[in-house]
Length: 145
Image 1 (cartoon, rainbow, N blue to C red):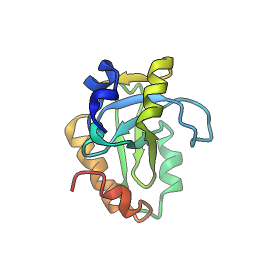
Image 2: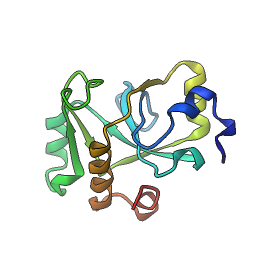
Image 3: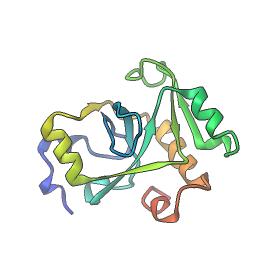
């Protein structure tokens, strides 16, 4: 897929590290969450790979206590000001979103764009995904080596 099918505003924002805020059908809460795009080249993909960033840091730490510590990337508002509180990216679970679904969410106004993650945080997320025993090789191959 090329970028031609993307609305111009999405074409300008869709890259590794882009953060969107929206509801995802695979989250049980039904509340919107922050999602970071982690594909190596999302504009040429039909499926986006994302890491979710919930603010319930201690709950995630407890749930993932048996996983390598580097698979949890904690980000504080001082490092990424678009977060109002400490947020954790759980690199042990990645989410898929079809580009068509992203376009639908954007068109319906159900998607909010935020500043891109700083490069060092994005690299820590990529590293966490690579280290995760839960993420399959198909998804690991979609992020930069």
